[in-house]
Length: 410
Image 1 (cartoon, one colour):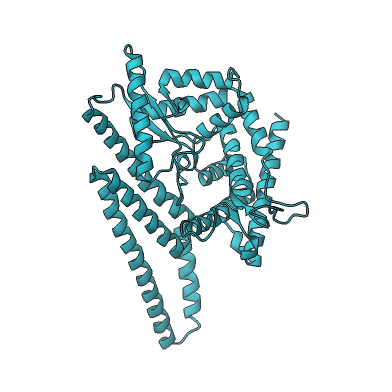
Image 2 (cartoon, helix red, strand yellow):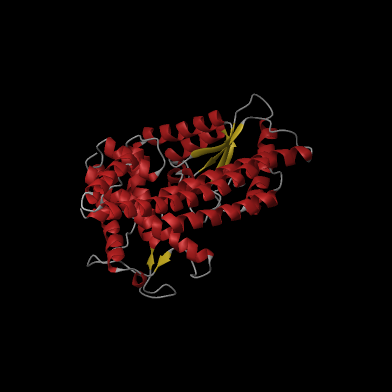
């Protein structure tokens, strides 16, 4: 494994190694050179620390505003400003997990505040307070705590069962969900093109309604098998965002129990994951479109990032791992010995390589420099970057083979 593909060093170990190398280097310098070196290092670290502290100060101010405002317009302004801040931070340090954490954190707060404002808005219109405890749950990249610079609404709504007035509760949460989707769009959360939003009855219901829905999916009671299997795959990344945390935890546990109890569901998910096309040509080079608008370009999302996330997900679900974050899933699969240390390091590096390129494409799309944030022109890469991307694709193909082998023998 080449040095640039080694797994990340824990911060404490990195500092210790740096100090050891610095002491070794100092032993080869005279006193004036040592003082000059230490002064340069001190100035550089002070500048970096100052820049980070300034960003964090701006961030803290905006996060506080989220919790105080009663204006959807102001929430939208904050969303725009915080996205710009995350762009600046990413271009400064290039940290994929740093951007994931930052975007997920502020968008969770925006969604939570929007939920609060929508409930107050409905009450002001005479609909009263929510009749039952409820929770907003995210899926997709948000559910995996992997938010980036471009987001849409991948949410479901669940509310508690009740002894009476079921129709009234259903009607309230229908109105609540429809208004919530519109207000979130105003704040900066684009509507999901796949309609995975609580305004869609498929993604809204009481605990009992959700149980019946899940039972119908795993027992093949719905006609559209492919769609329902994909719905269950999406639900595998469910994560609490706002509302009653106990209600959310109950539904998430129910989803995992259904997945673990019906092997044919996991088998179907595994088949879907291993059949996903990966961006490698017959001779092992990067696969690019042969014609059309994106001729000569690689669909980074469809042929790289998506199959990696999907295949890691199925291995984690099959292993009973509760974590939804891709990097955490890889680490836990290694800990569970479902992946070797070498394979885990390869996959983790592949995830960071693919996601870094996706984020850079998103920045270019936001600046209107490219038509979309999915297609990458390999001609813009250095030889090292192209090889790094090619190796990422190879690691995904290797993972698909591991999953195929696991399910053939089971």
